[in-house]
Image 1 (tube, rainbow, N blue to C red):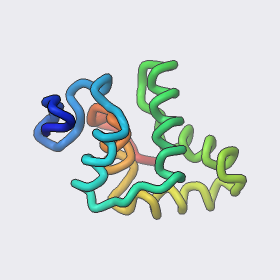
Image 2 (image 1 turned 60 degrees about the horizontal axis):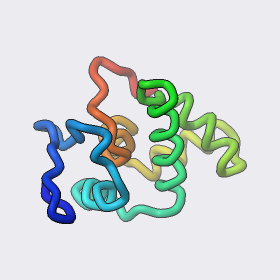
Image 3 (image 1 turned 60 degrees about the vertical axis):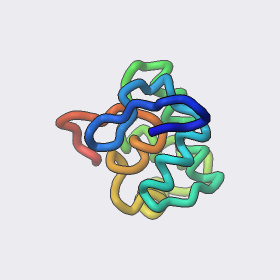
Image 4 (image 1 turned 90 degrees about the vertical axis):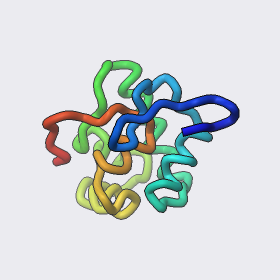
Length: 111
């Protein structure tokens, strides 16, 4: 994938090979490939996921992300999970992890 005169390497499933290559333009291009128009809610989730990854060295699972959404969006846990899957209709791993610039999680429950 070519963005802003820079070659961004993706794996065979369309996930970033190097998460450090992620930026807003990369996210927009990945979202476009998933037919998702990004909103402030998406960016809030991506910012949490990226911060969690940078701090812990692992991708946050759905439980961590929805727990943060409860705080960020002032909603209950069930609503957070419903909202997450509304924002990413083909799933957390397939879309949220991909668009936020994570490598594809292997053998991982999407919870």
